[in-house]
View 1 (cartoon, rainbow, N blue to C red):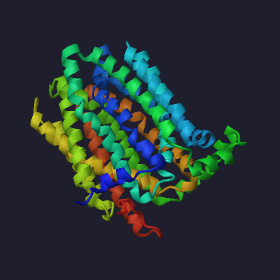
View 2: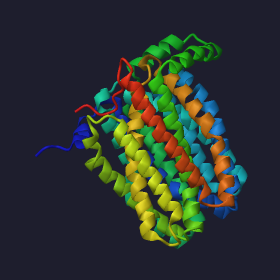
View 3: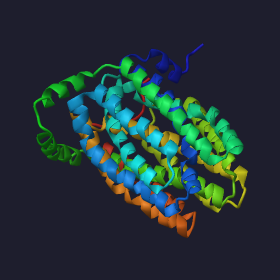
View 4: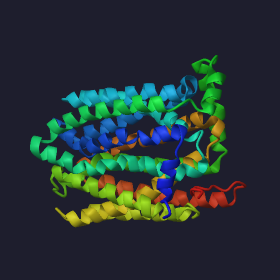
Length: 422
């Protein structure tokens, strides 16, 4: 019997890729348990839509600062040490603050500390890919997403807790549970991984260099990015996806509960449905995208995501079935788009300057994304559907950028390949 390609990849994982992938459920499960209810938690404590949007923008502003130094810290400390230190600071500490939050100030402080996650986002990605066969990257990123989706099977339990103990006490308990799980993940992964070859090279090169010297070298890194057309289009696609994710993650639950009048305890069922759909998509569809030019699946993905948002904003109250249809379109569409974009990020950057290039990319993406939290918050106060109309426009721009990226690779001497190698 032929082994499924994803299963074969998982069994064959070695080194840092193994440590990063196998420990990911310890992060993904608790995060996806509390994430659907964060905005409702804030509303229950007394925050307004505009304050929730402002918190998102404040967090993104500070992420610009932390992302700016993420490449330097990743090179100076090494991929392994930077990941461990800043994972603990950016996730374990804020979870404790969120667990006891009582007003706007708590959430602002937690958002500022949580913004440090941009450092391990950079260093962790370097750990994952630098000593890994590029042909396995699509499958590996699929497993990273799948690890988070395992929370789907626990999502109804979160809804049951909310219906039994109410929203606020349940969220406080989930944040404490998240603190334990994520801290365990960081400790275990730190034991399983080693510093990468490129990480050791960069640590040696930057050992005697001061921070100001390293910052001044970003000018050359920026020039390198500007000369790489596929990377520029990838940055644009990342911007569209990042902004859309922030809008959906912040305001979807508010729209569903306040406009569609779906009870909060039922949100877990939709989280379950979404995750099951994506799991099936990864196992049944993603392997079939191997060898297919990235343009077609990504364009279809953006169109499908637009359809999902149109369904979401046009269905009547308590339309459980049509809400499920919206989730079906979005889950399948963005599963393909996000995975292929992750691969594009890896293959379009210079591997010798990966940490610093990724730092610049993250800064650019966050810089342009940060105002949209405040913008979407004010739009939501006017009408709950307006943030999602904005998201539809952004998805259309993403489709256009995908088309332009495909055209640019046809004229490039080195075509961009985003499909996994069998």
